[in-house]
Length: 115
Image (tube, rainbow, N blue to C red; front, side, top):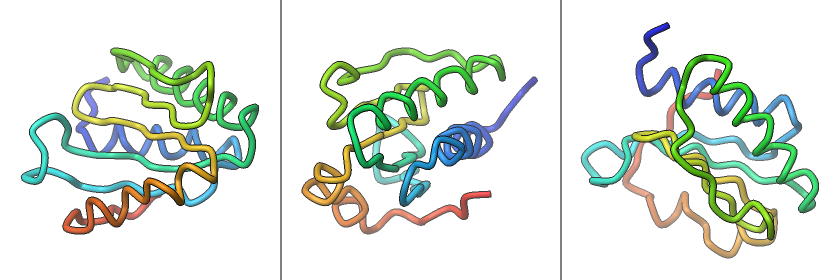
């Protein structure tokens, strides 16, 4: 299956939503960043929920044939990065999401409707 990048971001966002991730957002950062084209940002209310969201995203994208290049921060589950190449998924604990406020930092990015 050949997916475009926004399709990959949508798959990750849907998987996060299925684990009750809060505030699921996709940012189009093409032209603003050299290391990725899309960010998927969401948060969980506990470390356990953050870990469950990460596991669900990993399993769903792998099922779709998308390679997970790396996962960082899973043990502490405060801010976990899932590297899908040109799509990076950020799964925060709710406290860290508010503190880092990526949507504000990347305020020039266009938001993509999560389907």
